[in-house]
Image: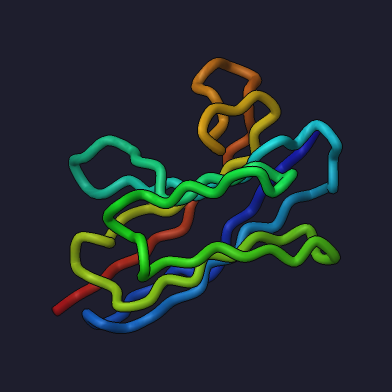
Length: 126
C-alpha cells in the first residue's frame, strides 16, 4: 500500500520561508497525480498545488501563486513545497496526497482515489 509522509513544518515570521517535503513509499505506476493541501484553524481543507505525474498540468491556488513552488526528486520519491514570503493566513496543517484517480491534479474525494499523509504544522506569526 502506498504511503506518504510529510516533513519540514515549523514556525516562521511573516515574510519568511519554509520547505516542506513529502516522501512516497514507492514509485507506483498507479500514482497519477500528487498534491499539497492545507487546513487553517476553523476552515475547510483547500488545495494548494496539484499536478499530474505525466507533467501535463500543474495547478496552484490563486492565494499562493508566485510565492509557493512545487518540485520533485524522482530518485528520492519525494515532492517538495517551497513556500516563500509567508503570510499569517498561510498558517495551517499541510498535507500531501497522491492520487490514483484525479481531477485537476488532485485526488478525487471518493474513497480509494488517493492516499493522504498525516500532515505537518506551519505557523506564521507577525
